[in-house]
Image (cartoon, rainbow, N blue to C red; front, side, top):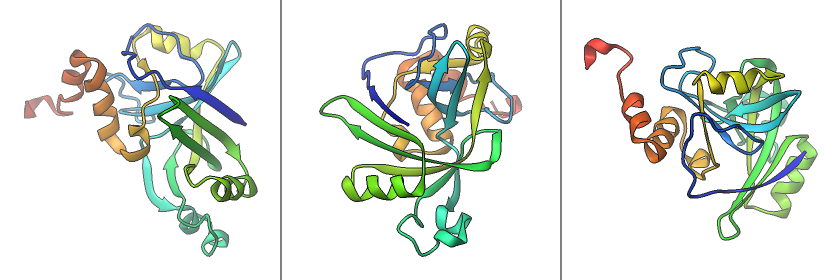
Length: 194
């Protein structure tokens, strides 16, 4: 599936904003569920029927060639792998994306096969390929309820999801748009270390 999206460089976090496909979900610092603690999720689908996304800040330190030895000698061998979420954590999802800052756009191909990944890579070197093990999913109304409860904040896409990993992108997003959230993000896990 292809999802062209617009970047909104000047938007700010809002805890009550409703999500939409192409937005980022940033875990609130108080969200302690180990599946989503300090996660940043690219929401790829959101409708009345449910929501789907992938965690973009959990690199596995492994490549597609290391994960699947059949691809170890292929042109996809160096594609980095990420933990996409707790749903279907035995499935690989290939994703290609491309930022076009001058146009303010983000093109996303989600759930593509190896052939499509190779074609995109050959046609346009600007596409970044990623592999995600599993995904994140919510049933009808579940994500909206979690946002209303304060578990997530929403944000516009930002190019840093491409270059930063782990907690760094999570902290950056919280600091960038909400000083109060940034302070919460900097709290140590163990309060005695304060």
